[in-house]
Every structure is written in structure tokens, then in C-alpha cells.
Amino acid sequence: MKTKTTPISTKLWAVVPAAGSGSRFSKTELKQYQKIQNKTVLEHSVNALFQLPLAGCVLAVHQNDTEINNIQFNHLDKIHFCTGGAERVNSVLNSLYHLANIADLNDWVLVHDAARPCVHKESLFALLADAQLHSKSVILATPVRDTLKKVPCDSIEQTVSRDCLWQAQTPQLAQLGCLIGALEQGLAHQRTVTDEASALEAIGETVRVVMGRSDNIKITYPEDLNFARLVLSSK
Image 1 (cartoon, rainbow, N blue to C red):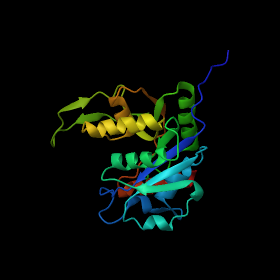
Image 2: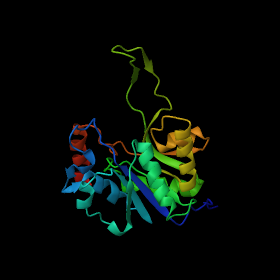
Image 3: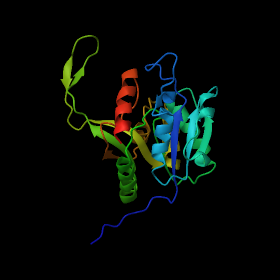
């Protein structure tokens, strides 16, 4: 007997918050505009998402960002822009508000880090397939591999069990209206919203996990850029 699936909305959108300064990467250079294979990190991140049948993608950029004008995305006709906020969560919410003007609140939206250029096509379609099957929010993540230590100062206090611990990645997929509500509540209650899943969890929404890949890295430090170059050159 075939498994019955509940299809998600016919429209799938993406949001990429790209207004951050990334001070851990550099005090003077923006990591999303570093070049890999003659394209910026941001281009790689956004273009990868269009391997899915996206209706469009909203980029949240800093109000003084001029470099964005020099980028020619592969699907420029489907790219929308809005002004980013003080924190990542504010940029995502601004993007969702912009999207709500052109999309249905029942449509589904992928939120993806601007500095995560190595996401694989297979991971993207696995994420989408899980949402189609279960009609639930879903994220990419990988099980924690390394031994974890709790270090409140300079010395180890204890070793933390890594059982059932996963490291969250992006994209993270949810229905537009539900995600707006979750982020609004998170901000209203002054919760720390480090990713979309944390906001959804806080309001009691089920968030599923699909196994990602360890090479779907987020560029945070300068050395991460070299690893991303190796990953992209191997594709």
C-alpha cells in the first residue's frame, strides 16, 4: 500500500538574512561577499536554494549595503530585497513581512544562512520531501560527534553527554504564517531566538529533523572560507 502524503502549498519561498556584520570573521570585511570561484559566498548560498522550485527569495540586507548592487544572481527576476534589522531574528522577520505581501500565509518558506554556501541538492530535496510527508516544520541537522565539555571559565566543569544532541543547520522550513507568529512571540517575550526552530519550539510547534551533511558549514571564521572552497570545488 502506498504511503499517503499531504502536499505542502504549491508555492515555496526562501528567505536569506544577509544584513549581519559577522565580526568573528573580520572587523572590516563581510563574509557574505568573499569570493569563491569568482562568485560571492552569498551568490553560492542563494543560487543553491534555486535548485528547488522556488516562487521567489527575499534577501534582507543592511540599509547601507552597496555591494549587493554588484551581484547578478542566477534568478534575479525572482529575487526580492528588504532592509535587515539589528539582529538576525529581526532581519528574518522583516523578510517574512515583505513576503506576506506577495505570498499566502499558508505557503512554506525556507530560511537559510547567507554564509552557508555548501548546502547540497540532495539535502534540500530531503527537507522538502519530509515536509510533504508530515506537513510539519523541519530543519537540517547533524548528530553531535565530538565529546562535549562544560567550561564555565577556563577549566572543565564536566563532560556533557552527547546522546540525542544534534547540531542545527539551515535551511529551516516552516509555514509562513506560523513562523511569523513564532518570531513575533519570541521577540515579545524577549526570548533568545538563535534560529527559527527555537522560536517554533517555544510556542509548542513540532519541528522535525532531517539528516544534513557535515560539509554544509556556516562560514564563521576566516579558516572556514578555505574549507568551503574545497567543498564547492569538489561538487
